[in-house]
Length: 255
Image 1 (cartoon, one colour):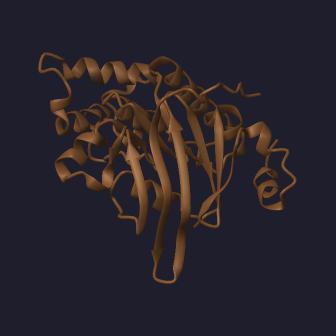
Image 2 (tube, helix red, strand yellow):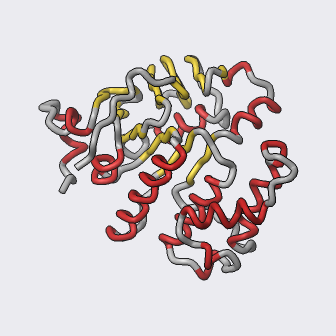
């Protein structure tokens, strides 16, 4: 059972207001709104094609919305130049659904890659090796530092990808289906790891998932993305007892 935390008085780190995005006659986002608070775990659930991926791409500046506003740590991303946008992205970690490790690189090299891209974020006296080992220690995989991705299990790949996200010490982490494709035991391990990281670093987490059990355990709040908008917002306990047929449909798989 999850423990709900009071986040109402905390700073807003991400905010989306009245976001619209269409592709031809396909209206994907129809006035979507969202607030992510400091140190909050916010889960967004929606059916395939509901606009979750489009929303994330707009959020990190990879796609331009038709209208609406997006604020990331008090920065309106629509008004940032490319250099400022790149600096802001260094504070946002992204755990991709497929882990997205570079197959030709060792675990060590995969973790060093973002360090080389964002060297200005760190003091020149900081040892990259120390950061790599610390990030791997956080996910329990120090011994895998010189392995290739092909030598890792699916769960290990997800852990390495999370270590690569942590190495830049982000203020916000975006999780895209963190338990997708994993067996139940490994999924539980990843969920526990996400909780441990949130407690240790106080990160704000936006979690896109179809896994209702993951949402139940980890969320402070949930948003159900239906018909391109924030159809329902509340805690897991509040939404799971709703009589609304559209909301009830999300919780049929719960165990």
